Length: 260
Ligand code: GLP
View (tube, rainbow, N blue to C red):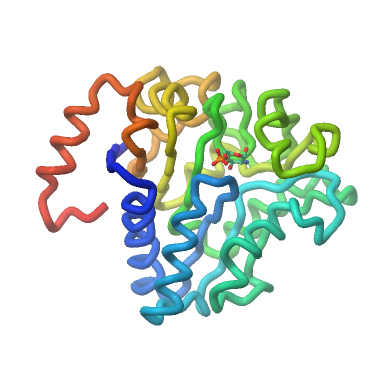
């Protein structure tokens, strides 16, 4: 796991965008893993800018979102399928029909996870997966206690996650109870992971993920098992890390040929 500490979310976003641009420009059929939440928004802003100003094309890309609420009607503005469309994909030239989300509508929920994992596999697997982290250490909607080898499936959201996400709905009651989420085992299969966390509210989760034990209690800690995971954090989100001096040193001394 490589930890990169920078002052601003914009600097972090440019680094994440560099990784994604590299995949998009060098791979004939890139598969992107997209995440919702506020943390990745500066990454999408930067990618949209590169699309408009620098000709970065996503026309040959396929994309899979990490998760989806269960029970929201298709087209609901807070369904993650719509959110990712509004925040990123409709502003670039990716084909809408190649942006996939788990199917959280009522029909076929039992097999929706299996079908989603099969679709990711059929597309060739995710080349680069963007991630955020919840204040309790969850990634996607893998709440604490999620199996470290879990596959895409239905999860019950914790009270904390529902409260955190209530800001997007008119009231807490409207936040769905369940979600379909890529499992931790599914996420680990992506070739590269890029997690972004900003703000003091994420400091404890980041410390547990990076320096705590590998534990289902902190789902983000599963990144310790991945051979190409980058954790991009601002100073506030890094404030709980014990070895931040080492992370800064190793980033400063990184050989030029060794890209992120
Ligand atoms: C939700 C999403 C996660 C996201 C988390 C944190 O639970 N399912 O993918 O990482 O929120 O969101 P934010 O970045 O807004 O703090």
